[in-house]
Image (cartoon, rainbow, N blue to C red; front, side, top):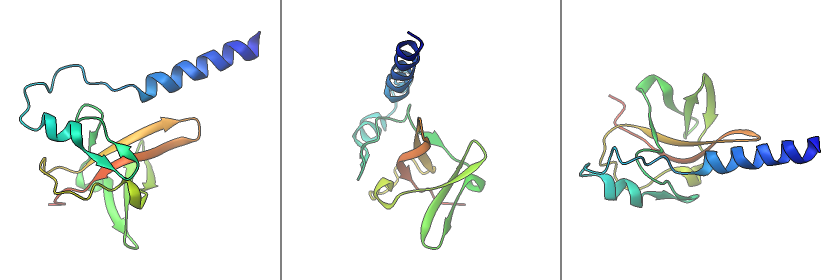
Length: 114
């Protein structure tokens, strides 16, 4: 019985983590449709509501690759997670996914690093 309960809880956690958090607060943004259409090689990024804006101190390039700091840990951004179209928002953003094996990066959009 305990194994079934743990399995159900883990499944519920995975589903809630994957669900979009677009609660309507960006509905009037002129960039909403653009954000909703963003995708990387890993698939759709979802929307601005799902992304996290990063300060310049929380991302960098190292050995020709991007890295981001999430929850105090540096995570390498996979090459296929990088959004290659121009950044219309201007700020650096990352779309992290929290899973059983830790944090992975679904999408990353570099900013101007000013």
